[in-house]
Length: 325
Ligand code: M6R
Image (cartoon, rainbow, N blue to C red; front, side):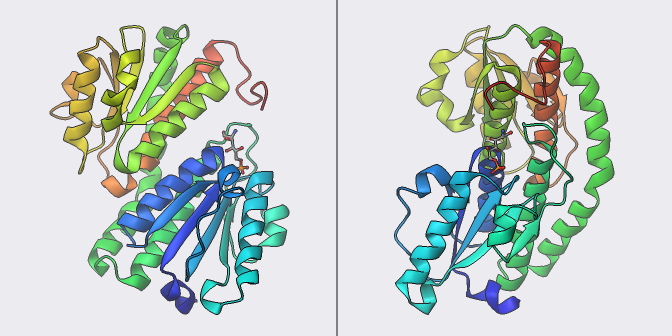
């Protein structure tokens, strides 16, 4: 319904964990590509401190399982407070992005984007994270078309690159499966890993760190690369690998210069980047294909997921059933 999309002036997204990271990429796209002010909230925070009500707002709940209590409660609370407000401009407009249409969220919300990635068997969400990203690309493109935030040419270029990605990413999975397996041997005894990314890849740094923590039990933290010098840099020495996502585009040089700062502290630098001028700085390069910067998270997440998988497997851990989760 074009009118529905046209009327939306701002977006709030509610999610937890990996779904929150997908939502952060989504938020970047919805703001920067589709031109709509967007905020992402941890569902557990939103429940107890929701933002002041704003008119013409789309609320998006993102949950792989469709059963996360905080996400359901935050979404229901938002629907209720908007209904109670009783002003048509403030009425709830809700979409849920889930991989389980037959779930609580599927029963409660009528506008569903079905991620359709098949059952996520492992506790650590991977393919459904990718599917959530694709859902956001679909939404951002639709908004951009309706709001005319980008030219038809730019939008069509993005759609055509997006549709040409599957064979490229398939090859990336194969290459990085082998690379990560080798790298995992050197990494299985490390205690801390820092992940850096900027712009659209900052949430990918967060997700890389979360995946490593939850399946390999190695402490990891993700930062916007430009923030590293404001504290986390104190952690660095040669025992702390720094994994830096440096995709071609607006912030490439910036990320390389942040990597230089880490190198000056003797950190072992791993680059997630296409080989190019500037990437010699990395002690080890996990090569990416060159793709449009808007689409780069779809590629940069793959080596990070595979690396976590192989490090956990090398440590003899059950990658499908992490402890405590
Ligand atoms: O099913 P949900 O997407 O609502 O789950 C949210 C988080 O609990 C979930 O993403 C968690 O962080 C995963 N273990 C990540 O792999």
